[in-house]
Length: 639
Image 1 (cartoon, rainbow, N blue to C red):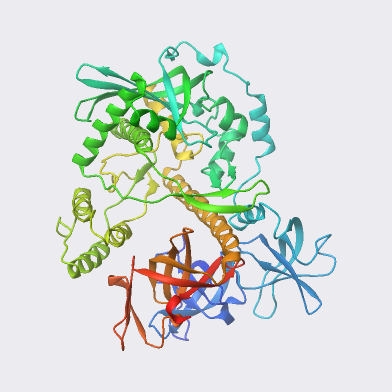
Image 2 (tube, one colour):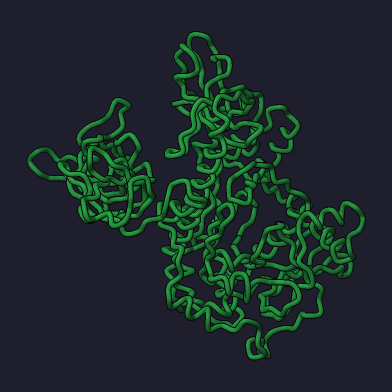
C-alpha cells in the first residue's frame, strides 16, 4: 500500500494522499486513504475525472463546512472499472449507458457503431474505451446485451456484473470437474480411512437445500455422549493450485440469491460427488468428540473416513418428531447432546441475539408474491451447536500445533463504541457490567436481564451495533460473540473457501506436515472481501425485489418500527411486509430535528418530539424507485 505523501513544492507543502475513490449518487465523492487516515472530500467537479473504484492521488486543499478535509485530484493511479453494467438510454440523439451502480454518477457515452444490436431500454455491459477527464465523459462499447429490465431474473444478472462476481467457471476447471468420477471408487477410499458406513448418520437442513456439507451422529457413552460430525471431504478432490482450486479461491464463497445460487464449486461437486446425499458412499473428514453431561468437549479426534448418510432430514421434520414425542433414539440422543452443549454455551457467556429471518415466495413466472417470516426451531439450534463444537475443536487442534490458518475472529468492541453504549443505557437506568473492557458474558447477562422488556428490540439492536464485524485473519484474537479462544470455519467446505483451507491444514497436521504456499494475511483479506461482496450483492437483489413487490402498494398506510436513525431521517420496517423504507427528515414536520447518534434519536428542538430506534410509527408509502432501490415513506399523520 502507498503511504501518505507530502508535497514539498514552493506552493506550500500541502498533504498528498493515495487511496481509493468512493463515489456518491449526487456526484460528490471521497478518497479513502490507504494509510487509514480521514476520508478526503471531493467535489462533483473533481469527480468528473474519476469513477467509483478508481485509485487516485489527492492533495488536501482545505476543509468542508463540517470541518472535514477536502481536496483536489493530482493524479489518477489506477482505473477500477474495465466493464460497467447499466441501462441504455437515448438522450438528445446520443446513446448513453446509465450505470446500475449509483456510486458511478456519470453516464457512459456509447458512440454510433459501438452499440452493436443493443437498443435503448435494454440492460447491457459496456467496456470502457475512454476514461473520464475534466472535459470529457467516459466512452464505452457494448460487449453484452442482457435483455430487458423487467425480464425475470434480470436483477440477479445485473448484480453479478455490478459487484464483479465470478459466475462462469473456467474451461480448465470445468474440464477437471468432468474428469472426476460420478460415484465413489474403491481407489478413492484407500486404506487410511475409517469405515463408518454402518453408523446411522443423518443430514438435517432446510427444505430447499441441495448441497449437504455436514452429517451428524450421536450415541450415549457412559454418563456423557459421543458426537461425530462428518464434513464433506472436498479437499480430496480440490487440491491446492489446481484449476478447481483457483476458481474456488477467486469466488471465495457461494452466493445465495432468491431462487438462484452461484456456487463456489461446479455442480458435479457441490450437488453431486461432495454432497452428502442419502444412501450413497461419501468421503468425509470427521470430528469425533466425547461430550460430558455438562456439555464440555472432554476430548476430540479428527480423521478421514468413508460413510453414508442414512436419511436426509429437514429442520421442520426433526423438530416436529422431537416435539411430538415420535423421535428415533438417534434423534433423541442428538437433542440431548444439543441441550448439554447449549447449557455450556450459557455457562460460557456466549452472546445469543434473537432475529427474524424472512424468505421470498415466487409464482410460476418468477414474480415475487409475498415475503414471509422463516421461523427457527430447536432443530436449527441443534445443528448449529454441533457445528460450533466441531469448529472449535478444529481451531484448538490447529492452534495447538502452530499450523498457520485463517481463524474466524470477532474482536473485542472498540472503546468508543462501549462508551456510547454505556451512555445510552445509563439514560434508561441500565448498565453493562465489565468495566471498560466488557466480556461476552457481560453482554449475555444484560440480554437476559432485558429480554422481557417492551423495548427489548431497541436494546438488542443497540447492543449488536456496538460489536465489531467478524473477519478472516491468521491472527488468532478469539471470537468475542461466541466466547471462544480459537475458532475456525471447518463445516462448510462446499461453499466457503476458508473451510477448504482448514481441511487442508488439518490433513497436514495429521500427517505431521505443514500446509504452506499460502500468503495467509492476503488470503484473510481476500476471503473477508469476497464474503462482504457476496452479502452486498445478495442484499442488492433482495432490495430490488422488495421495491418491485411494493410498487403496487403506493398510497397504502402501514404500521412499522424504526430500524435505523440517521442525520437524514428514519428507516422504518413495515410489519406486514418485512420491507424497509425511508422517512426523510424533511417529512417529519416543520420543527428542526437534531441527530443524536449516541441516543439513536432525532430530537425536535422546538416541540421536543423524539424519534428513536425501535419506536412504533404509522407511515404512508408515497414512492418506490426501482433504479435506486429506494422506498419513500411519510408519517401517516401528515397526510
